[in-house]
Image (cartoon, rainbow, N blue to C red; front, side, top):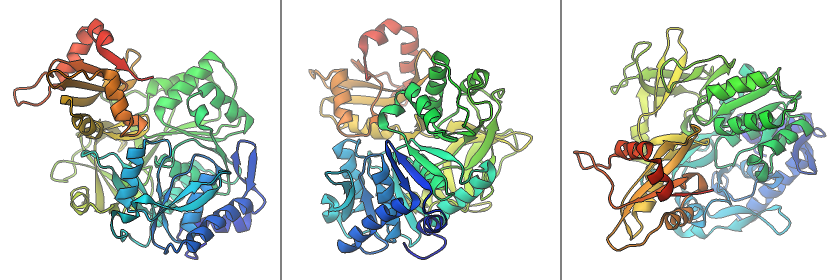
Length: 507
């Protein structure tokens, strides 16, 4: 491991020295102590050195969820490199986009036994290696409006500032058992993995199948005595439903941390009424990839109500960050006035990978120093509490992922049979947010909704594939010639028969 004390790998090495025989990671029937996990990570570090990878390089990690993934990420950091997660469940076209954007020379993949090994990357001829700040810890790609994902450069100091602030706020430590629930391509995983391992706690890998079977997840929480559970609100709502159907106590649970999208206050109220984990505190943590996972924190009692329709109570900034509500001139607005959320402080990312124009647009000089223009809309109440109102542009939070609606829309419009297309968010009868696509074809084309789903599934991650697809003779437009999304929404609301007959639904 590298020697600097202000690095994630150095913090991990200190925990290994202090607790070598403590269980660090549980992956099915495999239990790894801190010393064993460190040894597996050291093998990856040695593999990078043998491959001639220079410290400071970007290294892809294309490993399935499990102990091998954690060892790979730690091993990359231990060699002084930054990791670029490439989710192996993403379509090949999306994986190639990420690898080419990062100009990866090598990628860590599983061998026949599932162990991480260093392998040359096909994108090595995409151009010379990127020069990134020495402090860079990882590059996570988020959705891009042109169809090209954006890489966000986050440093070791940013991650450690987050963990230190959250440890003080949530009081987590060596006795806690965390779940590793999320893809490494989603920055919630940074908080889960390093939050547990750098505090000397224990992490339990949640098998991918259990992320969709919430009853089985509840059984895992009981069996592994999980005390810290991190979920996006949509999944939390499904967990509450599973516990309503099959009640069981979760006696060890101390913290439920919600983040990644707007919290469902009704689900929190139902959770409280269930009483499955009476000692557990539910936290809502608003955050952004460009400001290192979490920005604010608020404990929820289950009795909260939105101050205005659609608002989410987000609490106050973590100690290392500052949130200012500003107008279009970046001037602070009074309490109660909606504006854009401007985030400054110790976890604001280095910027985007090779996107200088976007850097200048989004990373700005604010009232309290260098800041990130979130594009989120919110307001402060009279007590100084933040309430998030949603996106001010076409980015939305859906199932824990930030979705740039223009990305799947651009891919759909590129199909030779598509004349018009729009991707937007609609509400299902139960209130769940769904991704919808409406399109019209060129004359004579026979492109069915199922064909559209298959076209998108081959090019974008699953969370960017619409749940509902509708074919039209032509899309309605406004007086300005733009697609009239409101008219499409009204048509759905007024004619469920038309929608049911025309929609292709992705299971």
